[in-house]
Structure formats: structure tokens, C-alpha cells
Length: 193
Image 1 (spheres, one colour):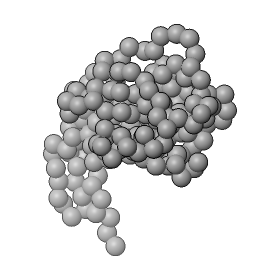
Image 2 (cartoon, rainbow, N blue to C red; image 1 turned 90 degrees about the vertical axis):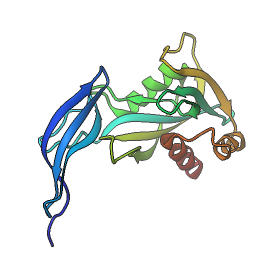
Image 3 (cartoon, rainbow, N blue to C red; image 1 turned 30 degrees about the horizontal axis):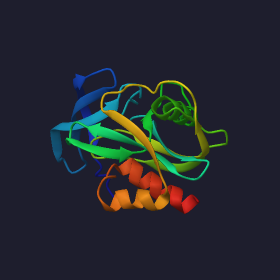
Image 4 (cartoon, helix red, strand yellow; image 1 turned 120 degrees about the vertical axis):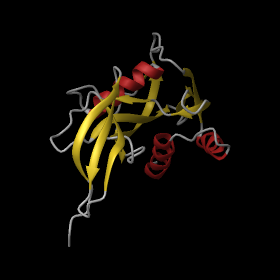
């Protein structure tokens, strides 16, 4: 059996900003088929290995439940699609940071929520593996409470609100939750309890 998976032949940086690096890759498979302008997007904090593969987990998303079991969601404006979306708190893992520590940090920065107990790992998700080089680790946090202070003021980040499970399902059915990390995170949290 031959190995027909595409392999990286050459890579150039087409664009980068403070967070992302967009690559223009030349890839070829064992049958000789090739693409010279394959686009891949990778967080800059994730070092590339010699074969072009990224570090496995660069992001985190947290299903945060308050003491009454309600789920914290953020109302975010997503410029590329021109829509508001209800989403889980999420963000990038800093270089050298453990994923659980990143989950707690992002949760506190975006929502001002802290959760005293251990986080429950809900696995990882590749949000768009045909283009984005990396995975996001999902966590469930329980008994979260707000702390004083201002939330990080990120472009497009709107208000935080709490929803019981039925209200969150209604948002999903209405199409107001469509982010893949949020949908998978909510489904896995329901399975976990």
C-alpha cells in the first residue's frame, strides 16, 4: 500500500499579523498530484515542526456553568460573516502555557468568571482542519462566579449572558449558535452532565 497523503514541499508566509500566520503551501501526494497555492492558517504562538505540522493544541473553549447550572455565553460580532453569534468563552494558549491554565485565563479575561473546582476535559476539536492548523481543547467548568473588574475589550466582543440548557438549545435551533467549538462543547458538556 502506498502512502498517498499530501506532503509539504515548500512553504511561504503570505501574510501575518500579531496572532495569525497565513501560509501559501506547495503540497504533493504520492500519486504526483500537487497544489502550489494551498492556504493554511496557523496561530503564530504555535511552532511549526520540520514537516510543517503545527503543535497539536493552540486554543481553548470553556463551557462555564454558574452555581445554578446556567451556561455563560458571549454575544460576539463575527466580521468575516457579518453576524452576531452566541459563543463559549475561548482563546489562544500562550507559549509554554498549559491548556487548563489557558482555559481559566481566557474565561476570567472574557467573562470575569472564576471556577473553584477542577475543570473537566471534554476533548479537542479541529474547527476547520482543511485550512486552520490546530486544535482547540474543550473544558467544562462548574460553580463559576463573577469577580470584580473589567472584561478585556476585544473588537466585536459583546455582552455576557447566562442560559439554562433549554434556552441554549433554543438558540441552537434558531441558528443563533453556529460556531463549531460552541456547538461541540455544549453537546459534550450535556453528555458529561
